[in-house]
Length: 436
Image (spheres, rainbow, N blue to C red):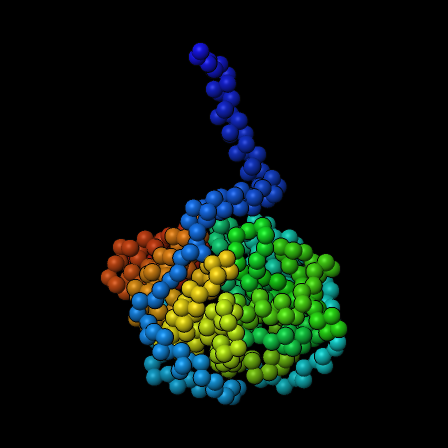
């Protein structure tokens, strides 16, 4: 028997679909449902294309023999070291602005056994908005009246952009919020305590894992207090909650912080700059800071195994990139990727290149363009949505170096789709005579 449908039923289906779409895009409905829809789509994609199975194998490296030379301990540098590299490659990629460090003459605040700062306004992050939400919380301590949407409009004009870099936050603080900021790596728990005790909340980037998403990813938090008796930090977390409800043990902070080279950002009014740099001590000098972090990573390579050792190798490469030792950095990254292959698939931090792009710098400025291409291809094709402007930028740079100008232009333009106004891509297109 043939089933007949009334024309009204046939009309009702598209009308119902349109109604659902319109309701879904109502702001307060979208805020509550978007992450669930994205989560479902992401899980379906990764079930079909498991990213944790993908292992990048460098094709142009120096091989395992580099390990012995790389991890030999060396004395810590003096606060004003001299870089002895024989060449200084010209940078054409995104980079952080170096500033002159003021002379620090103040004495750091004596460390109390417990300190807890107040005045931070907590805000749960909206979908894919960890960076702007966390920065807005840190700024609220200093009286900034904006919110995470104000920050996001500058930091990630396309809401689907996977990540906000610390240097982008630093730029926002100084150019939009009217405050000052300093970003350093190789952080220590005692230094964080000293900054908090002096009245400076500390924003850190760390690894993060949870039951509601697939695998390891990057995340930001604001450290607002500490308690030595309990060995915990109070933190404001845009995903978990405010510091009234959330403390993290010192050892957990260290373990998760390691994944991002112990990076930290401190915000302060201009008139308190000398105080901040006094607390930082020799770490106020950027060159010293990167050399200190490189040595810290080298020491950890000896002491750690598994995924933690992978992070240590990666951190060494990241710090050497900042010191413009690109060949040394490339060798460190080669070792990191070799150790990555030995990590249990369930624990592999396969989103790493979404957040930390040091290997692109190292391989590109070492002339290893095919490794840049392969690494960028892996990162782009195995993301459920390739909203990763940096990877498109570096793939474009490699294509251009290899003579594929048309392919480079296409990738530069795609990077601008995911991050409107991304300056490095706009700059390269302008050099090619292309309107961004």
